Image (cartoon, rainbow, N blue to C red; front, side, top):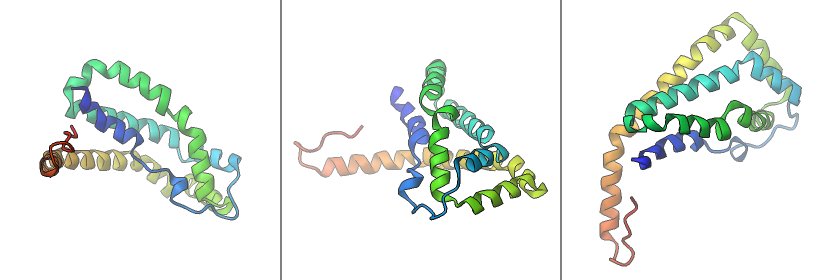
Length: 163
């Protein structure tokens, strides 16, 4: 039963570090500018809403986890709350944006279309996450079948079950 908690952990930790994927711009954005961008972009609200949607999806797809909701929430607050990840977000934004780009994004988020985007983005992100999780859940038996087939082909001494 608790092994069904693994997808929750994967969703929490599954994104590769942004810094590992990019080369920092020469004109790195200032911390104060990024902090302002996070506020006008309502990143904290979006982060919390996305996290709640992910938790809800986990509980919907794994009803047996309901009795562990308090532990999952405590774990998330301690290790993945916005307060905990904010310094990493600032670092990632600084590594990816120039000062000019960050200021342009602030201007965008303060515009009418930027406000519309902010209002709709959590819904889009939630729907996208739920769609992806649904597809993964439907395909999961195929992954298990493929893993079992590979394990069955190994010699008995090396064929330890991966699950």
